[in-house]
Length: 86
Image (cartoon, rainbow, N blue to C red; front, top):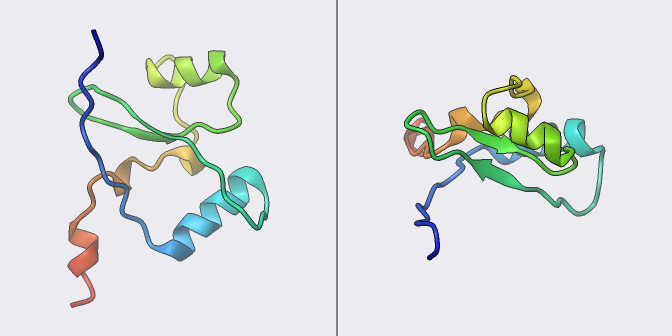
């Protein structure tokens, strides 16, 4: 049996995305990222590439706080931001 998968969109301005990835992974020509979305009622989005498995698990299960730079939750299904400049 496979787990049900929901679709989620991360909607963030490109300059903010680059700023965050530069801080997390250093300046690179190619970005490789793992954005994890939790299944809880108040869903969270966490950039987890480079975290140790134990650390990632603790963050996902709310045993550790999400480092602010890795917390993309406010961009999760942030459709309103597309229309802000209209």
